[in-house]
Length: 310
Image: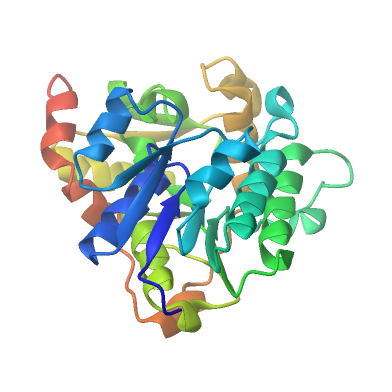
């Protein structure tokens, strides 16, 4: 790739896109961020980082193609699918790919989720135990990336992202956390793979910096593999307050305030889980950070949030 790199970022105001932007800027690689409204506070905050802003929506192929002109690479991430937005993830992935191809972009780095594409092998899949749209559209987006004809493609498959224990995601994923309790239907002996968004950013940025090394690579990243009791212990050590993990039945969870798809995802962890092999990324020479290391970066924020806890 001889052109001076300019990376087009989808999801620029989100967790993963934001992490990729930070990692690229740290490498002095130029960034163009896609935003819906360039006058929004989030867009203005991005513009202050000395990067380009492109106003476009993922439903509008024309605006995406205009945003892609002159870029050498594209970072692709889409919101997960559920019955309320059926078809949206596939449409948005295909539109971004089409725009990138029309603009002559040679490289794509796409993030999905660990075990995407393996859904038909999940226990209970044929019986309809798990929400099909989420997994089917994740797999469809990956297939679209791999078959689009890019000179370089990379697929990163994160498991459970560590920001889920930070505001504002904690109120959705763990609504009792502010009480010092992690109440979920996750079994006491179930271990979950966790990844820092910083590491998603680091791996993506490295793929853009070294396209040959990461070309046609599809891999998952994990920085930690912990039971919820271990997660509670990590939080306790960072905050200096006591947290405890409580495992519920499915019925108890349904009445506890957890959103339906959150309950399903936690039950899936008990039955299947992400099953990330740390050796998948060993050859890249990048050491992911642990949950404790990630939360240490947010220690002041966490101690302020939980100052009322005993």
